Length: 173
Image 1 (tube, rainbow, N blue to C red):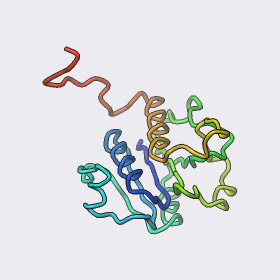
Image 2: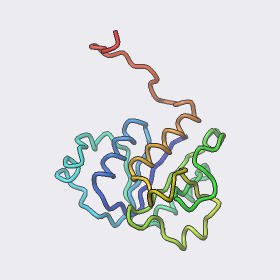
Image 3: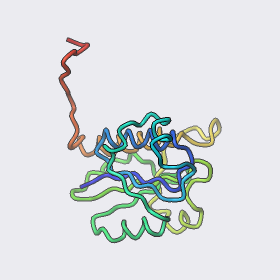
Image 4: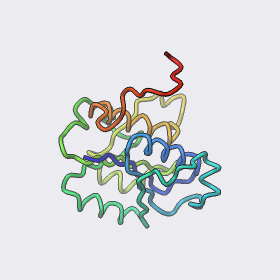
């Protein structure tokens, strides 16, 4: 079982850097779907505060169709579309606990989200983060990705992660 975060045409390198950091911390595979709104270079990634890009399990895809072909070829894959237009929320109990299921969380562009036609063809895969839509248009992409992956991991009992770590200079001891 592997968890995956996929970013459809990410525009903002800071968001992508923050999501990559979350992926490195949670053993989550990151998928980036072209085109990007920035260059994948050391200069841009260091500006995003990510000096450990080599610690991220990452795949690049030329377009949405290429990414979907990868997901569809995996018999154990379950695709989740993260969008404000969904009728089900991301934290429904039992959503991520099935054994041997690879969960793919697909997030849209910061400015336009996922393609409307694609969304209309897959409404049963859509999940929403509850929020007050009267106050904001959307949540920050990197915040939304962290919220979703940590709920998934919570339901999976944080498998593969350290719940407690002892540090040489522990501030609580």
